[in-house]
Length: 328
Ligand SMILES: [Zn+2]
Image (tube, rainbow, N blue to C red; front, top):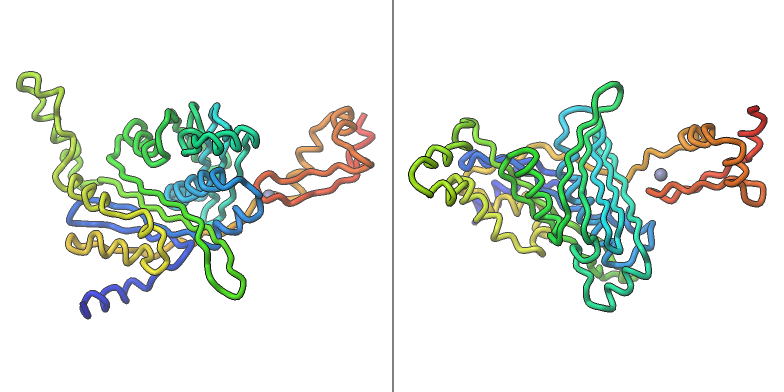
């Protein structure tokens, strides 16, 4: 035990809101793990979302953090759902190296009804639609967008499907969200989320195709086991993660990784902190209003002012309509 503790100490505990990249050499897998605390509280605390909506957005935030922090260049990673359930839109965007923002758009009555009817699982709330993930490098670089269907699955399943279809990389994702009561002078509720993403990336790429080689005899081809032994072991280990453990601050991502993979030689790398940071500004919003016609400006004016709230961070910007007048 003493030896294990020493080794753990070398990891240096990333703490909340820090993504920990890891590699399990013995199993040809790489991934990232994170526990979100304060950043989630700040983002969700600013919106008064019903609990199941906040929970769903928190899952999307955890997934976005795991994916966005893997970008190897400056840019944006945007995760967005559009669906026909009571929660019609979820948007989370991550701007390298660490800025995170998010919001949900939903039908209040629809959500309340779903809760009352006991149909408020993430899949129920989203309904049918799509989840899109966009990578935007800005400038003249082309945007890349991958889209996957939402069809009654958990976000974990959706993410796995996405990677299987779009990237053809075997991927496992675990996400967990909880609202915890923290005792203190004033007991307060805090949001926490945990996430782990692992991908099978063998150096010898033919190993990923190995099962194809057995496809020749008889109808066996229809029942090929598409899993490599190493990946099967990786998945079995990931299956042992308890939802609570994934977000428990007394465990932390590094201790969890150690528990899961130390027998296979897990290595962790320098973490990547994420912060609550919206990129909206008075200039940007003025830029949008500059494009309005006189009529649209008039329509946007109330009591002599134009008030625009940022959907992400709720910051309100107030303009004098005179700033946009006399353009014709
Ligand atoms: Zn904002």
